Image 1 (cartoon, rainbow, N blue to C red):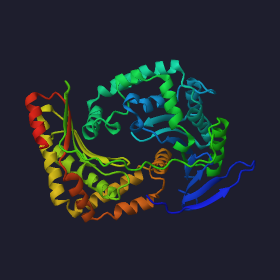
Image 2: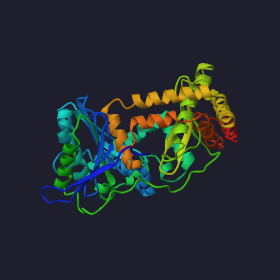
Image 3: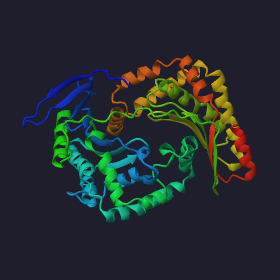
Image 4: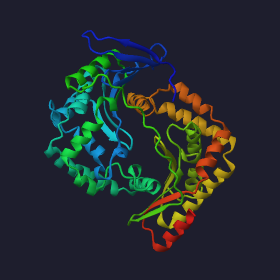
Length: 459
C-alpha cells in the first residue's frame, strides 16, 4: 500500500513529556476523509479518519497478535484473552463495562483472527470520550482473575461446540488444516477442547503482558471526530494505567514473510451425518502484500463473487446442484489461500466438484474473456465503496492498514488500482494460482467408495 501524503509534525507536551509525531496520511476534501496518524513516545499509534457528515464514531484498538502467534500448548489463548478482557478491570466490573455502553445505546464487541485481534465500540459522536475510556481501560487494566478464567472456559467450549454443529463454518477450519497442516495457520482460532481446558490464568496473563504492550497496538477511530482530541484522550487513558513503561521505543513493524505455502493435492474428509456435504476445493493464493492481489481480486469476483459469476451460473443457475456456491481469497503476511465453497446433497458432490474443477482448469489455461473481466472490475469497485459506508468499516480499514501494511491508501487510490487491472494481469494470476494442483476438504456423510473418488478428483 502507498500513502498519498506523509506530512509529519512533532509537538512537545506542555508538561515536558516526550513528543508525539503526527502525520497527515491522506488529505481529504474540506477535511472530509482526512486520515491522520500520531505516534506516541511509548510506541502507541493512533490513526483517525474524519467524517463530519455523520453523528456516530467507531473507536477500536487493534492488537498485533492472533492465533498464528500461539504455540501448540497455547492453542486458543488469543481468543480466550479476547473474552477475558470483557470480564473486568481494576476500575470496572464486567457489568460496568457492558452497562456503560448500553446506557448510551452504543455497540461493543471484538474479534480474533489468525494475525490480529480487534476490540471496538460504536457510539454517538458525543459519547466518544466514554467509548475511549472504556475500551482503553479494558486493554490496559484487565485483571484476568482465576474465577473469570474458569467461568469463561465454559462459554468458549460452548462456542467451539456451536462451530462444530455448523459444518458450513467448520469446513473452513478443515480447509486451513488441509492447506497448512499442523502449524499455527492450520489450527483453529478458537483452539480445541483439549487446549482450552489446559489453559490456566497464569499462562494467559503472561500471554497478555507479552502481546498487549503499546508498541503492539494500533488505535483507530473514524466518524465525526477531532484527531487531536482523540489523541489527548487516548494518551491520558494509557498514562493513567501506567502503560507507557518505556518512552524510547518504536512500534513493532508489520509482519514480514516467513515462508511461502506450497501444498498440492491434499485431501481431508470428515464423516458427519449431515443433510448436505460441505466442500472446499482450493489452492495456495497470494500474500496480502503481493502486488498481484488486485488482479486476484478481480479474478475471484468473476469466478465466484456474485450471481453473475461463472461458478454461480454453472452450479446453481443452470443445474441447481447447490444453493450456496462461491469463491474467496485469504491473504496473510507471507502466503494466502484461494478456495471454492459449495454445499450440496451428498449424492451430487462429484458432479459439483467436476464442474468446479473444470471451470478452474478452463480459466487457468485460457483465461477469462474481456467482458467478464470488465464486469468483475465494475462489481469490485462498487462493492469496495459500498462496503465503506459506515464508521465501523472505515475504522476497520484504517486500523488494519496501519497494523498490517504500516501505510494507508485512499478509497480513490484503491479504485484506481482495481481499474488499472488488465486482462493480461488477470490471465497471468489465473495461470499461477489456478494452475496448481488443488486440495480438497469435505465434511458430510461420505461413504468409502465416494472417498476414493474424491481423492481421484484432485489427482
